[in-house]
Amino acid sequence: MPVNRKILAALGSAVLALSMAACSGEGAGSGGNDGDKPADLTIGVSMPTQTSERWIADGNSVKEKLEAKGYKVDLQYAGDDIPTQSQQVDQMITRGADVLIIAAIDGTALSGQLQAAADAKIPVIAYDRLIRDSPNVDFYVSFDNFKVGVAQATALLVGLGVQTKDGAKGEAKGPFNVELFAGSLDDNNAHFFFNGAMETLKPFIDDGTLKVKSGQTAIDKVAILRWQQEGAQKRMEDLLTSSYNDGTKVDGVLSPYDGLSRGIITALQNAGYRGAEFPVVTGQDAEIASVKLIDDGVQSSTIFKDTRLLAEQAVIAGEAFLTDKTPQANDTETYNNGVKVVPSYLLPVQTVYKDDIKPVLIDSGYFTAEEVAAGQAG
Ligand code: BGC
Image 1 (cartoon, rainbow, N blue to C red):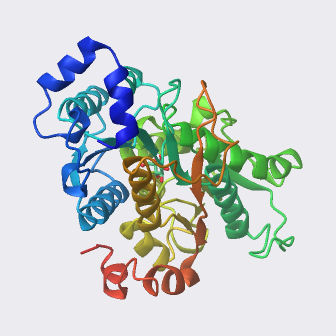
Image 2 (spheres, rainbow, N blue to C red):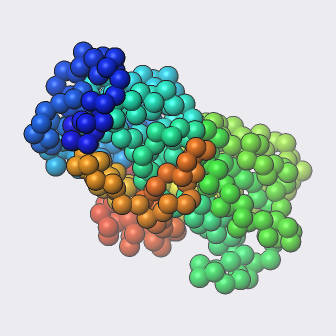
Image 3 (spheres, rainbow, N blue to C red):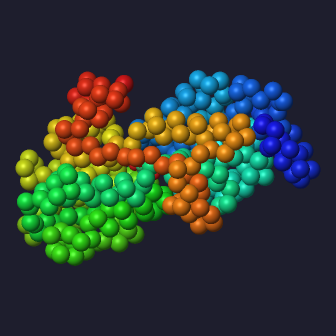
């Protein structure tokens, strides 16, 4: 454990010090070695789920980059189950983690664990999803999540022809029938994505260019719990039955995540949508199955967030804490977690349409051309 935290830890309650010592093992978070060599330090990495490939890529990238620097890594996936994640983080603390990197399932559910981490002087980095309602979040690495929403809504407008890619007014006038989807309400990002999207779409809804035929425009009406593909498919099926059974067609769907987009696309295909009349469907994460759908002209766009760069920032921040430095933030205003503004490092995002697959995803080595053609990575 680095010196400052050691001193602070020594000043902590005797009971805590004893209990930490009792469960110390070799873990440096327990009061560890004086040498502070990377091999003496462990970073706990808590990821939400393996059902979405982005989190697997995130977990692997963080682990590889930390191990390459000689640190020990305790990487756990929580299967999208909140109690499992709480338990895994508890275990990381008792096993003596020196830093925690956490992508929360429910941004408000880890207060107890974070308090235990703070008591043990373990810095906490929120990874991509802000942990809310706790003072014990030391740093946040993510993308500009409001801009993700703006980019998704813009991609919907571009897909419909209402706007051009360079932001000019497009030829198409509408009116277009669109439906809106949001992510899981317990994920802070879902709100940023939706707010960014709605700010962009509102003028077009207000002037009648876009019509949300279902009337469902509030986030709590359009959110999909745990970002589940099946949930999105079911809601799209319900919308088709309830609002489009009079022969009118859906022209576009705002979807905040590729997994949801695939559920929405399945519902639309099952309802007979094909070819030129297929609605414009947006996405996020550049998941390989969706990149193939974009290449095939089925899905219209996705938002690429380079998880390699995010992992790198998490590692830089983690290493700063391990060497008793303060990680460098590039945003100290946007992310108030309900208790404090968490210093953040935010990365830019990129919209990917069919034409961008090669320059953005293949040429950067994110996927190979073969993987895109197969719709499968690895
Ligand atoms: C992430 C998105 C992802 C979503 C579902 C969000 O917190 O920022 O990239 O699509 O979770 O996994």
